[in-house]
Length: 130
Image 1 (cartoon, helix red, strand yellow):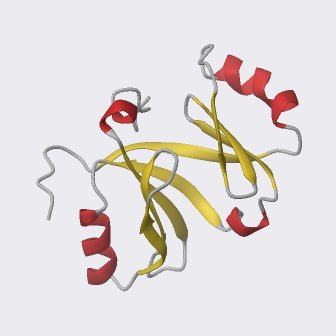
Image 2 (cartoon, helix red, strand yellow):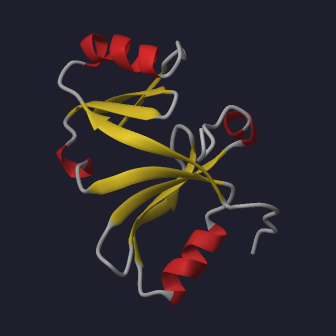
């Protein structure tokens, strides 16, 4: 198991499903204090991370059950908590554009995406409180 000092959850991204990514970006950029969007693709979806927002456009039907995206130091404590509390891994862990990820269904039925960010991305992560 990975030694994690401090809280494992580094940040939470609000998932926003939009029809037109380009049209939606200006308001989220302004709300995030002028943060530059970081765009990337995953499967059939185009995404942009703007501060605490994760905008998704394209064929998003397979992703709409996710409550939020949680940025973590390590997936190991997530896997341990799932095993202890009746959760299950739906997908992963696997490599993704922003680091290793997994999709988990908690014992209460809620579904979250967890991303273990690379060191480069962790330095610019959004804090849970901010």
